[in-house]
Amino acid sequence: MRNGIYTVDSIENGLVRLLWQEDETVEEYIAEDKFSHEISEGMLIDVKMASQKVFISKPKHELTKSRRDEMKEKMDRLKKR
Image 1 (spheres, helix red, strand yellow):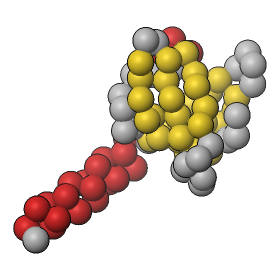
Image 2 (cartoon, helix red, strand yellow; image 1 turned 90 degrees about the vertical axis):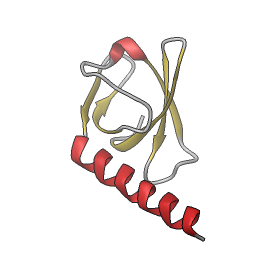
Image 3 (cartoon, helix red, strand yellow; image 1 turned 30 degrees about the horizontal axis):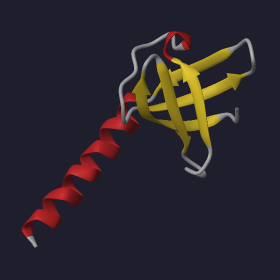
Image 4 (cartoon, helix red, strand yellow; image 1 turned 180 degrees about the vertical axis):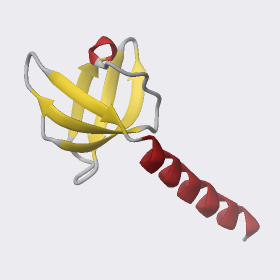
């Protein structure tokens, strides 16, 4: 797994699908219980180190809120068309 910012794309049956922000074709799957913090779909997380045994991530709450606000604005503009 690469270091960097990932989006929590989905959470199903205890498995979290992450998309790497630099290239969203790169997918990683991590067990939900490996996270030391609460996660939700659409959340951005910063992965600092990952290996077979170690997974360290930090939630990016401000960046997540900013991205969600951007998407809401885009959706609102589209609805007004």
